[in-house]
Length: 161
Image 1 (tube, rainbow, N blue to C red):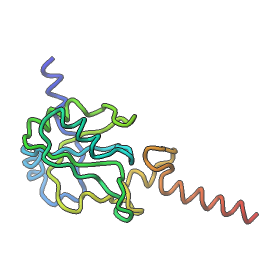
Image 2 (image 1 turned 90 degrees about the vertical axis):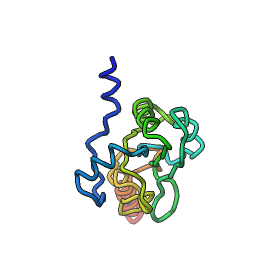
Image 3 (image 1 turned 180 degrees about the vertical axis):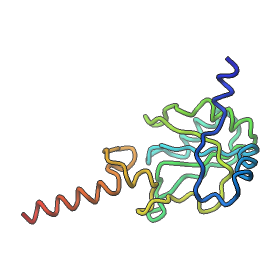
């Protein structure tokens, strides 16, 4: 049973494309970090809700909410920094895949927050994954950016006809 639990504490294979260091440096950073990346949050999830859930695993140093680069509104992710790495590992084990605000959240170790990473990297200012989303998702602002543009163009075309 312990081997199953330990396997949950292993970070995913995701690599931040803008990470400045080498693969070895990333491995070193991930082996000492006390920071989590939390994804698939509702745009309406509050910092207080995150404190409530993630504070059960240990004392939180700070939470950095992900923001739309242009509108400065929440865009569905955050960083949670703990004082102790063991708390971050416990939190990743116990909260990854659980629900917060009726959404299944993703938690992964992060090499550490750097200023500027709190902003979405998508062309429209939000997250890249929301640019291409084709389904309507109330918790993430409705249609994905490209789908919303397509629907607006279709609507304008129908009005002109």
